[in-house]
Length: 306
Image 1 (tube, rainbow, N blue to C red):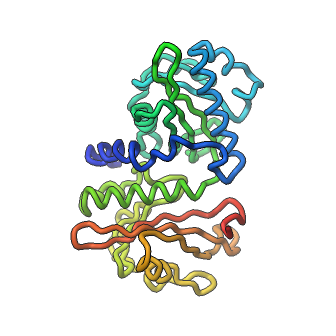
Image 2 (image 1 turned 180 degrees about the vertical axis):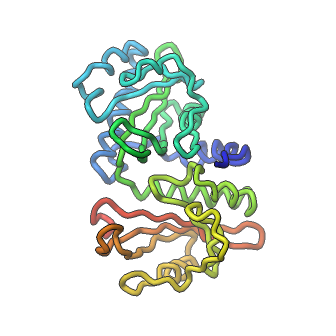
């Protein structure tokens, strides 16, 4: 498996400090689903407690059966070098430096967390998405953790977070990933960017939503799910279950804007019943070429109609 190249890691740091700056103001109301709102609120409140009481707050966060620690959720705290300071579920991790920890496909996990800590905002925050082997799972499952920077009373930078398995994907997650992928192509050029985006371990592939790149004619240029596909694929004539051609609709919309959302109805795996998928696409130019960068997801509820 390839590992992320230094070019991408450097750019990832830049993107996290610029394009995701809006995450600094992430509040529960920013999210559609209740579980996500509750997770964000939990982390914000825990960070506030640490800002008031420093590491003494760990005693409160470790109380079983409390809001902070139950059968589904717990909080973790790292310092700005990647050392675990607090982990009530696996206390043996405390004191260990996990700065180079990767997920099951090679995504840097703690490196993402440390990027949040390096941003100038005292309450910087953001999401991490990674495949992890949970204690109740027979195979790796997607996990999402929300992390917030906190400044303790002694001036230390601490990173406070909590995560969930089977998180409901938000539109903003997909949009952020596609926007960052487009910026990668724009700044690094086709060859370097395509190499990174074609790697399944790229952090921009999240929650079974993978970045795909086509040209303006519908030829697939990047698809990490089919990295060894020899035959060129063209999706310009693909129609969904109701006869809709999502690529042509996207192409038409991108004549007048830089980004667009489209819908695609496909058979649901295992049942064959219709399932609606939302696709976000951004147009980007690199040199003399123009590319369509996209990712899709299946909303967890009929909210997709809104």
